[in-house]
Amino acid sequence: MGEKSIQKKEYIVDKARDVFARKGFRAVTMKDVVEECDISRGGLYLYFNSTRELFEAVLEKEADKQDETVTQELKEAKTASDVMAVFLKEQKKELLRKKDSLAIATYEFYFESQGPKKDNRIKKQFDDEVKVLEYTIKGGVENGEFNADDPKAMARSIAMVLEGMRITACSMGITEEMINSQFLMIMKNLIKEG
Image (cartoon, rainbow, N blue to C red; front, top):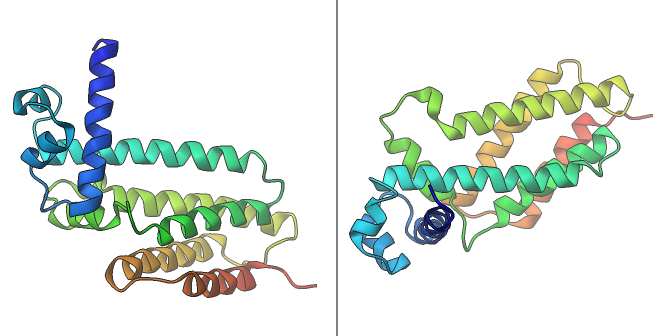
């Protein structure tokens, strides 16, 4: 694929992201994307065969962008508490993101998906969160910052709380105060007193 084709495909993915953020996954048609991009139907089908394929490209780009942001911030973290603070800060940012969030579209996509469960990005995100949290908690326990008898169970519990907060943000709405109180509870359970 030439440079111009790569740029065109990126443009389509960016514009499609806006459509999915506005309408969710189920309501979006290829016609919506054609209109948003101001391209021909054939021009869109050169790159993507379906809204499903297009949404997968959007999710892939989102994951790459988020990984870049977190990696950059983690370079500055010196302790397990710093790593946990960066992690929770990014979660909070995403939970409070209302205008251009892909959360509803993502849940719609996976609830309707007939594909194999192993390809489920929500599950992958959850499993990745558990791994990062477990690694961070183990490090905090080893250096005396955190108190956790079972770092993996603690990591899984935190990931479940976060997933519940994501669903709450989509279904009922969530406030910064609600997020802060949950994060404070998480940190109180982790931080070693004394």
